[in-house]
Length: 343
Image (cartoon, rainbow, N blue to C red):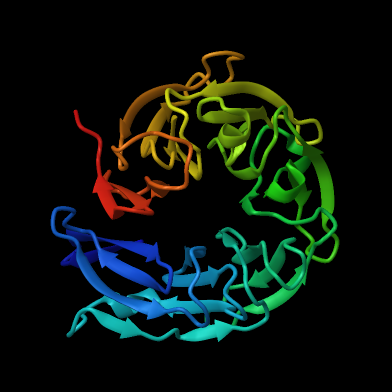
């Protein structure tokens, strides 16, 4: 989350904030000075402690869900409250809570349409639940879709990619871990969701999370536990999505360590991967259309230097989108880390 402050039409300061999910709360940290981050405060969980908490931001509001946490709902918090605090750290309360859901693993927001997609929720078997958040303090239930099963994570875009059959449609890519597949849904009409296609891949274990390239031609997927089940090094799959009706596996990348992959995000021609005990890995994807050597590692930050074993420690997620170029790593053991590329 960023905030630009103007004085006499001149930008004098860029404020950047990290929002960090913890077992019992959601924490807010001013990281504008990355050498001296400031813990501003937290919102306590609505219900039980949980190791799974997810936050997305839309129009200056944070939307918070938690998994395996009872009837948590969606906590909604006005981020402008972080400005001009007189006492820190502060214990905040949500501005409102949407109680139309119970426990959810993840929340995805397509900012172009102002709709939140709640996935992995306990009250419907884990298929996406649609909530209108255009009025953030009054979220509105729009419906849900359960036919494709449980989604562990998802990405939703207003489609502008190469498959002109779907230009302008709202396209949902679900990483459906329990069924070891990726599903592509047209969710433009929330009352008439259409499954476009689905796909699987060799040596599946748990289809965990993925991200489109910026031109929406390729989808990069991580399977969270295949490294444990099959014993190979970190494996990242690249799918050709130029035809959404007929997606195909394009290439497979194996990293230099046996560590598990978790969350990954695309920024330009780079893919930023939270790689558990191997820390943050940065991959060049400028050659992604190639059938081999499509991804090349160009840098890393090892947040868990003890070893790179395939276990659940280290880098959990990463945020590479700050205008400053600073990168946030959420690390299970080390907490909040702020890094940036060297020269």
